[in-house]
Image (cartoon, rainbow, N blue to C red; front, side, top):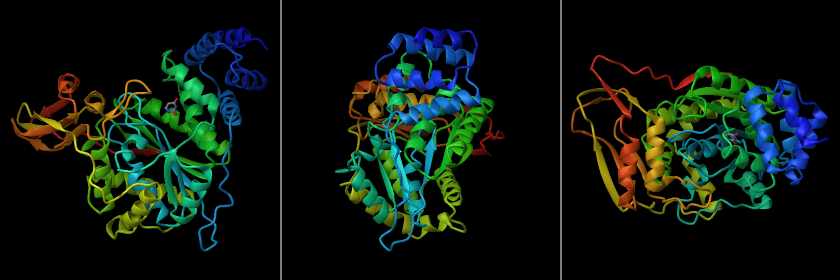
Length: 429
Ligand code: URA
């Protein structure tokens, strides 16, 4: 094949053959297709799409570019088989759900191999959050991962370089060529990594709203349906929830402050929306893994999930009892008027937390553990002019200005009779 012919096929709205797709992914991963040619092909796919068969081939080729984990032999110390189940969120602001969820699901005998990433841009990364815990390490060898899954039931760690390496290269290219927001490319990117990770069951939390990749319900639904079909075709029992990301999850967006909020949830408290989504995703993950009749809400209340959390953190060198880092400086943002807070813009809060130092603009940037945004009111709350709405946290006070600019117009305060239309869980696919 010649790369230029593959590009022209897609440019002209044609369908790529399986052989063309396999050749393209293999040659690109080996460095035999130039970046500018792959960029052109990505743009042609962005504009003209791919059909179900093409997406499926594209995903399979990306999986085949690296190693594929296999947990089918996993047993607990008593010798019982452990079904694997995992969750993936398409990314949002204040989305710390993985932290309480992985240990909660492990309480019921499932194994949760949660291979996670770091944050880039306005959405946070699970590993960045956990790295706020003194001593905790994201890098875990394959052997240590298997042992931890068997003995503790949950591991949250870095994915490592060899799962779908084609995606790693391709995602970096998409990031700088305006081709991220394509449903075929997002679906194949996410699912290639999740299928290569080897989980038997998968629950997708597909975010909808202006803090998410997918701004509209119709686009999010199409992404969810595409990913569920890819999972099922690969033999992974896959379901998706569409959930709201027009406003942040919980009352914190940052790293250490999100860990603290997760620990509050594991202690039986925490914000209602975080608890609701954690419990619902746990139910879905357990059902998908064939574990029926579990009561995850009870395991948050009675300390069982907290026990697994502590063992999971300790197994990776962390001290679950240690004090978390605190930002050196803080500034308060006050409510400009009386009324009901009906909107709190997820994207604005995400950008503010990022600018305060909680996130990174380039991969090599270092995040501040203590930085972020603590919210004092969520949509639905009655607020009074001059009351604190948020606390901005950072070690570097020159960052306050940029954060405040990001938050301009971020809250909508309406007359007291108004009610926000907030449905956290929108649909199940
Ligand atoms: N997350 C991914 O892993 N890939 C995408 O393409 C988008 C979000």
